[in-house]
Image 1: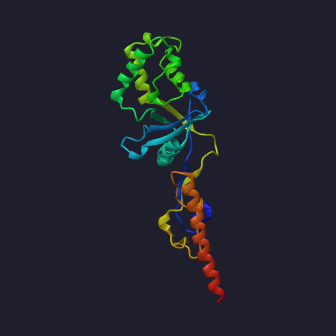
Image 2: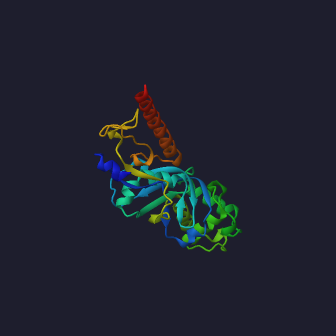
Image 3: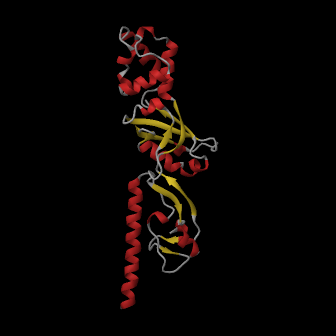
Length: 250
């Protein structure tokens, strides 16, 4: 489709993958495959991007997969960062706040209170309910901090408490690539919308040439948006073509 459009005079915005998952090289994280987080705050950091891009911070659900991270918050980041990620070789950092509703100023008091209340319990078996995390993930946090789950809360130093809190608020993951090939939902790039009459989907460059769907430079932050774009564009183009065909017989 891109070749034909180009041959007929259209420019093509270089197509790149969009709406994909992030590959994370972390063997211990893979053990959490299937664990979901109802709400996290995730920031995408790329060495090639020095300016602040508001869309590179997203809030929403996240899912751990057997190759990395997925879920709505990750897919939105991949959509907004599609071209930057492509030019960066799909390498970067993801900084995740696993407890966005817990203010950083409250962390110390929450952890200290839990330490006092459950001093004789093993760290692995008890953690603040305010965090809203699973036991599997709590075990991962302890492991990343080099803490044994068998020690008692009473034995944890205040420095260790703060390091746990810091990890929950600013957990850094190294992005080493995107998810498995062909798992991408949509493509960013294609024929620019400026070269299309959107009320008919007809080319402004080549008369009686119509476009709809993925060949156009349209990609939304969810798969449903892209389906709707294809359906609506196809309907408009088909209706226009039908009207032209009907008119030729009258």
